[in-house]
Image (cartoon, rainbow, N blue to C red; front, side, top):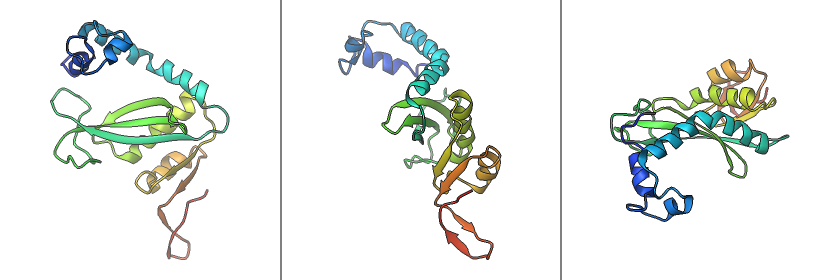
Length: 187
């Protein structure tokens, strides 16, 4: 884990002497040093796959709705190796950003999170999320619903069809009669 100071503001917000809330005291970390928090973050990074698998086993049982969401956040500084200029969701076109992919239950319980480089296009993240749902969490049957930005023809051909997945999209497709129709895609 890089120790260039990206976590230091969190340390200052939690430490009893510089806290902006009682959260550090409530969590019992108000007297922890920055190195203690870095060690905890390193541990969490190593334990993340096991934590996510356990959450998936506990919350993604039977036929259930799984939500996958993407967002991005811009940042300043030069130390984040994932920071890159990409499609800005909040209008910060000149600032580098990182992209987050979140998998959660329909009740909003977070199951997994993945960070992508800031210039990662939304459709590119689909394969990673499908792999996580199938390979790591053992979900065999997936129906992916997405907008035309997420479900491109290439993604359907390269990811969904080879894996026998179903999908629903609002994207327009060309019919056999050469006219344009707009309706959900069905396999």
